[in-house]
Image (tube, one colour):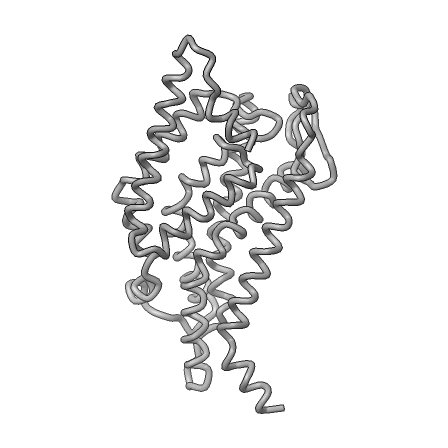
Length: 286
């Protein structure tokens, strides 16, 4: 029995990696379920809006949000952030798990890895709450359509250009640097923590840096469609490459240039006399 327990402890990184994979898979399964539920196959939804509940729930477009709808939208955003960010957070969490195992038999063991992960996810829960409020405000101003996609070309262009510019800013670079070097982040913020409160705070702080690095990319979902699964996957891949690829800084900047060009194209298209297809329409169809 003792030998079996020691074997499990030696494989704790595999256990943590499997747990992260299961959590991410469940989040993606939930998003796919919501996306399938919201696919109305061309039905006229001009008088209604879809509620991301997975049970075909709709509400009149002009009706105010209920507390239940607010909760469903928050859960949608939270699941989306877990699915998108869990892969890129894995290197940091796995490194923490390895050090926790090494200190397990010492007089001052570190707090369990789960507390660090909980602090990280808490930061993204805060972002999800803010995104829910922003979505509510945009819908109140009729700036989102029934499928939670930008209904205003100027809003879409502004978000794209702002996102592109942000990718080149010092704050983006600073936050990305903290996400790219897990050990450097820990050493610059007091190292590992033995108490639960300190461990949660450390995870939360790492999550805040990740929010600072990626929030503008998440804002693009208001342009391409909040529940557009293809673009959710593309943005998740972009976030992962920014953080783990050796040239992640330049990937971020190239993405910024693409966003600025797309935003400028939308502006030019709005002035053109020729019937051009907008970027919003293309991404919604995808």
